[in-house]
Length: 312
Image 1 (cartoon, rainbow, N blue to C red):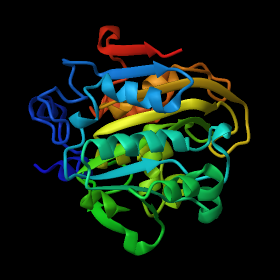
Image 2 (image 1 turned 30 degrees about the horizontal axis):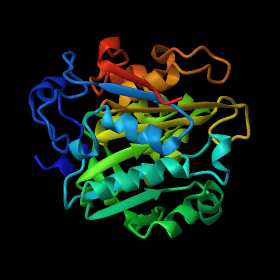
Image 3 (image 1 turned 60 degrees about the horizontal axis):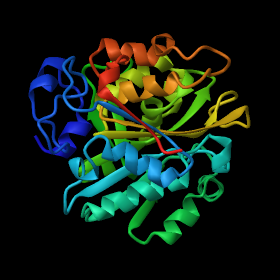
Image 4 (image 1 turned 30 degrees about the vertical axis):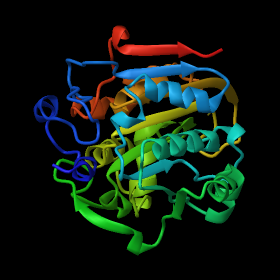
């Protein structure tokens, strides 16, 4: 199986995931859904230097070369869906994106593409979030605005509950590696918006998720269709209330979380704080609980398989 086929069709059963060599990981490490993790399964870094934190988090998982090989096309999915500065916590900090682009270039990536589908006022979203300036300062980064029907292709989702097919970004088909770069924030409909929720920026019809489907179930469904090979959660400035767009109560947690299990990364993010004034219990976040029940990932990783780093 090609690596791009893996993250586009993340519908394999848990047993198969436990035994196969995962494309894009570069090692025979067990899949994130396995009960028997080998090597660090999750890394958490605290420190004020964002670039150093991102690099330390990825290094703890074996380094960027574990995921990106020379000649790869890398697709990044940050959250730049709101016209707010990074300090509001509603978008991925541009320095997180810069650090990942730099590491991918060091690993020999042939092309690095970042994309998102803002709900409204795309140009303003990109400018206010810092994405426009970032793309202008990094010629090795191609930034694309999603939104046109031609940007998407319909794929089957036979194991989903709310839909049987869904239109997802065509860029996923072109890439060798998919890295998800969500921000950690509250959400009025799902309590939190982190890695799994960030995948909604890769679909054409978000209206159905909010209007026709059970939102939590649909988010878990989507996580069964699209699976990133690496998730890096930006929890430097987090939006604790009035998410996903804010403004609301924010806190500077100076934290980066990285892992191959998207559910485990979100679960660790939930435990960082209270969201919408609710205790940070990932088992109470229904889309995470559903995804864990389906074997997409786990809510609980043994402490000995978490690398914690404090950069000061």
